[in-house]
Image 1: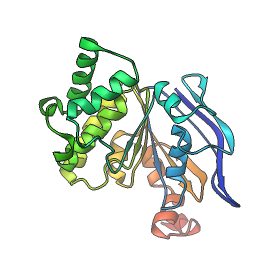
Image 2: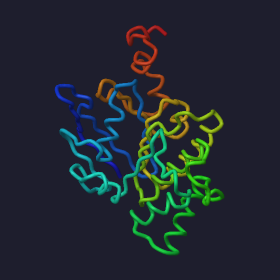
Image 3: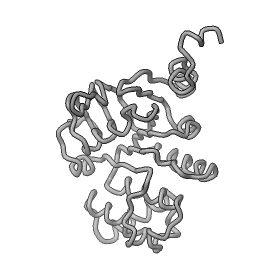
Amino acid sequence: MLEVSAIKKRYGTKTVVDTVSFTVGTSECLGVIGPNGAGKTTLFNMLDGTARMDGGRILLDGQDISDAPQHARARQGLGRAYQVPRTFVGLSVYENVLAGVTHGPGLRGAAAAARTMEILETVGLDAKAALIAGGLPLMDRKRLELAKAMSVGTKVILLDEIAGGLTEGEVHALIEIVARLKQDHTILWIEHIAHALMAVADRIMVLHFGEKLIEGPPAEVMDSAIVHEIYLGIAVDDTADT
């Protein structure tokens, strides 16, 4: 579904993402981890068209979107949910999602209403459709952020530290929602809450100083010497005797 080949980004003389490649299929979740400054957000910015690439190629469902503007990528099926929800605070929950449903898939009337309620039910907000978005508690604003990301006919969802600021119980609820979304979406998830990724991701990719260091099954990656070195300061050679 999403194929990324050797993409790179420079700001002046500094390379912040350096020839990163990966592929993620439908009903698959790729977790992305790395310390601050690793290039994770820049990677997502290149994927959704916020930032222009300085090299490489992005294929979405077989279509080359490398030079497509952000709005075109959204219409082709790429959505993004942010750590700090970007909702229309003065509109209702229903209206927030309806805006995407009419703008993306171009649905109208009863079809748009039905799709909007279907999305709200998926994220657990169908009973709160009439509430004003600005008055929602944080967890419900996160739910709405996910709903908005889905609303434009999304095939690929970029989750940008969506669990940030939630309680442990809320994180578990979020995990359940993302697991449901994964059934018929491609998901890339940047997250610092490791157990959330471990619960949903099929693979985890580690970025460090803009480079892809390792990619593989979650348990294998999280137990790897290189991850221990990055996060715990344990030298790779030192792990051989442990």
